[in-house]
Length: 354
View 1: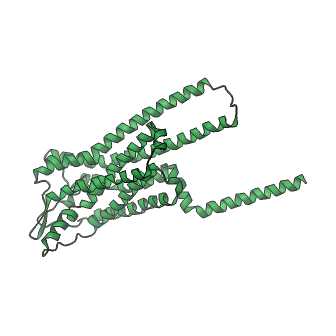
View 2 (view 1 turned 180 degrees about the horizontal axis):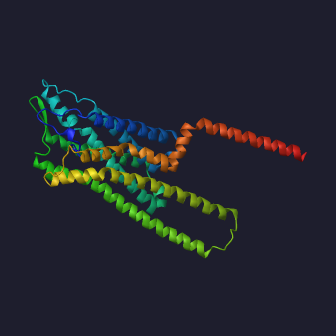
View 3 (view 1 turned 120 degrees about the vertical axis):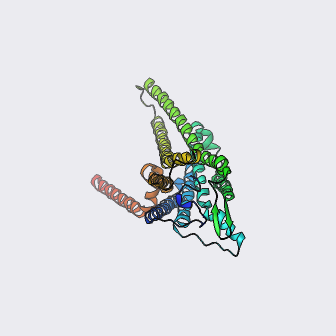
């Protein structure tokens, strides 16, 4: 998960070359298109449906926006030909070499995507362990500002990658592996920020949430057992458990959805991270041109378009939003049909009573 996670990014004296294999290009195009359509759909639904204007969906929208931009940059930097270096303007050529040939925008967004998953995880931790305070004292404007942190950190951190790129005469040369600072400083920091930190946060938070929900379930079961034979004394007493149960189911569904998102992040990136860790720390041992490594890269890049499918199949709030956006006419016609039938029944009953 760095500037050299794909073998085609390794620069020689000839500069960075376009993707060599047609199959790889097709995969990247498909990933980019899926990411643009899927994440664009998520943003459209969240923007159009008022019921989805919540803290959780703010970070989901932020994640989709990051992944949408990543999908666009994937096509721009890995599929389309790289721009030629203006040899008569060395300053501009150096800038393009350091911050476009090195895929700086793409990997900055990868960092931002990983850190935004950390924010989503911490949001669920606060919502589960401090539910009342979280609902009553949440500052939505402040959270919008916090949502910018992954973007800022990602682009600021990856600025250091320009240190390993230089414009020398007519060529753009990337000196990642030949520079000791890359192996000893940049690479460990990148692995920690992009993978180890998110995985640690996910494992810790969701383990704590599981324990908390299990204990809450046991307490609820004990309370219901002690009062199992008592009848409801009023209509309000009957409605309150239903409301509580609805909120509980919605909260659990949200937790399951974000847990699946986190699990797919780990599954998609773990193989690539392990292989590249071996390559960086063991002085080789992994062929960056091998089929195994390319598959690990495909898995990692696939993480940018998989989340919309998870929301569609698992996240009930998003499913309702999809129906409101794309089935609005059908819902309206069904409602009108139900109202017509009910009116007809009322008229029939009135006739019979007469």
